[in-house]
Amino acid sequence: MRTQELERTGAARQRQAPSRVPAQRAPVRAATRSALTAAATTSAPLPRPRGRWRRPVQATASVAAALALLALALPRVTGTSWSSVAETVGLVSAWQLGALTLLWLVGLWAYCFVLAAALPGLRRSQGFVINLVGSGASNLTPCGGAVGVGVTWAMLRQYGFGTASISRFTVVTGVWNVLARLLLPALGLTALLLAGSRVPAPVLTAAGIGAAVSVAMVAAIALALCSERAAFRVAGWVGAAARAAQRLVRRTPSAGWEARALELRAGTAELVRRRRAPLLLGMLAYVVLQGVLQWACLAAVGSTLGWAQVACGYACGRMLTAVVLTPGGTGFAETGAAAVLVALGGDPATTVAGVLLFSLFTYVLEVPGGALAYGWHLATRRWRSPAAVAEPA
Image (cartoon, rainbow, N blue to C red; front, top):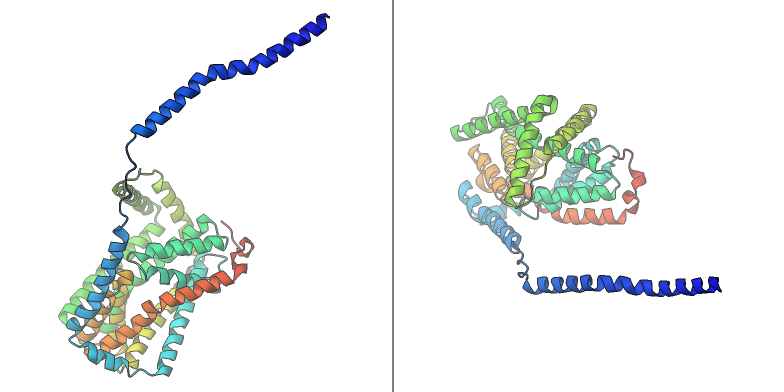
């Protein structure tokens, strides 16, 4: 009997226990719901997104500036007319266009050796694809280099490469491209002096200033890669610039830029030391083939300029592609290169026609070429396997 009474008492307590907990929590839950309701009714409306039209307006203004430079500034600076240019371009035959296209593709393939050397495990065919896709994306918008880097980064992640390897790849290829562009004015001026060409004073002065600035910047980059103390100072400048940029866009400045930059510099310097031969030879072959393409485009329209003059105009045009106000520096590069070549004795109509033909390959065709290359990337599924990477990071 005693046991039965204890069992009945315990069961009653168990039935009563759940009812006490909700009774204690009910006021708290009611108060919480009331507070949330009051906050929802009294809170300020969500801020409207800012900058919705900023990028479209910037892109439209950039394209308009490029078209204005090509349509108005280019013929006025060179002293020719668009009718003369169109008549000259019409003289190019189909077999010449085919030969120029083949030369352009060979130059792109030469650059694949640079990409493969900068990222161990990357196939040259993969490098050819990401080069075309990244260039095509970069040519569509102002400051398109960042867009191209983002597209390349995403594709390399699909190929299975790690963040550290892609970071080193981005730094190495970026530094190599910058060094090549900076050294071109000095090489162009040297070519003119070696050929004994008669150089107008304004062209000689501009080339001399550009060469001096380029050599100084190349020396600074080389010093940052070779000296840890110099790299520490550069890392401090990079960190300060990054924090200032974050404040400008109203983001909380992040710490650790200096440490990350120094770590990235160490890996980059080691990669350059181990693979400097293919990096140098690949970039040299690419730059030379691009210069040959420039000369071939001018020759196809009947220009009689020598190799030294073409080299100087090519160097000027490649330098001006770094202008971020228009996609790929379009307008600035063509106007600057044509102005230099005309000042060096080139016929205005044939010079403008040759420069525009060169831009057809180095800028216009890269956009549909990038689209075709991206289709190749999507069709080749075996590339997007992590097992294809020889050196994971």
